[in-house]
Length: 104
Image (cartoon, rainbow, N blue to C red; front, side, top):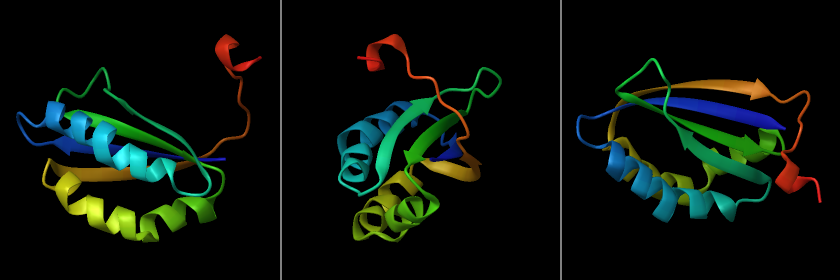
C-alpha cells in the first residue's frame, strides 16, 4: 500500500471551503478509482495555515492512475484555487494495524 501525504498551504479564509470541496467532489471521485483505499484531511499541530491530505492506494501504479485520470484533471483547478503551495511525500506502508471497528 502507498500513502501520499500532500501538505497544502491554504489561502487565507479558504480552509473550510477546501475541506468542503474535498468531501463533496474530490474524495467521491477518488473513491471510484480502482486501487483507491481511503483518504482524509488532517491539520498539523505546528502549521496554522496548512492542511494535509492523506491518500491511500493499493499500489504506486494505482496512485499514478488517479493523478492521470480525467476526474483528477477536471477537479484539480478548483482545488488549486484554494491553496498557495503544496508538498508531496510518498510513503510505502510496511505494516498496518486496523482499529477495533475494522477487525470484524
